[in-house]
Image 1 (cartoon, rainbow, N blue to C red):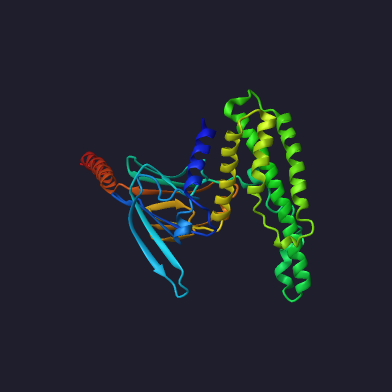
Image 2: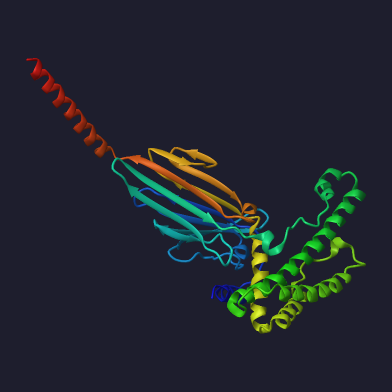
Length: 349
């Protein structure tokens, strides 16, 4: 089953990596000329590159070709890893949620007088609001003006406290949704014939009490000093409640809980990453909407935040005239015209 596969993948990743906050620069160089190759360069420190949040190194047919190490004046070390693949009709790329596949697709077709080349790069969306809730739902609009009040430290501090309180409510809402998604995942796995909303309601009712009691421990604390990392404290209650209302095994729910939390941390790390595409598509004319174009080379820059809700799909189509066929057709047409002209001349004589 799909859900079981997801759980196993995430559990394997969790067992081998520790998550650290950071960002990675992802650059793809796609050459669609005859015999062209695909290249992927990932740049960041080693903790960012190997914290388990992306499929790194990328799977076959990507092959590592080089790696470089640079140290700046402050002693920070940056690694660059270079990967290459031969030109494929379809190949995976690693910028995707754990349960989805990022793709690069290429197709080439020959028509009578033109050759068509088309490519599609798919960067799947993360469904952040559906799975984790609106991250700004409980933030008062005044917090958007924090930077305007640098001179008024008292007001700025108060706005930051309001923001911190809003983020606490947002985090509580996220864990409520996690309980809902855990039960839904159990139901989708074939354990019930139809979705049981009463089961979900009971689970949320039971867990809301846990959340309320847990948040009372923050009552006398400065909200800006309250950590939003609640998973270790809430993990066991979530598993227990889901197991009780559904009858499912605690071990199964433990795996699902870990996978949802891992996915969230993966997204929070990745939303600061940079993604760039450089595509060489030699053609007579090109139909595309790149950020920048230079001759037959197209450039796109993708902000990771744009992947929060929906897929980002980059595509282009190039058309190239098949000149020898065009020349042959022109020659035939010229011959027919000449033949017709010759006949007309003979009739006049």
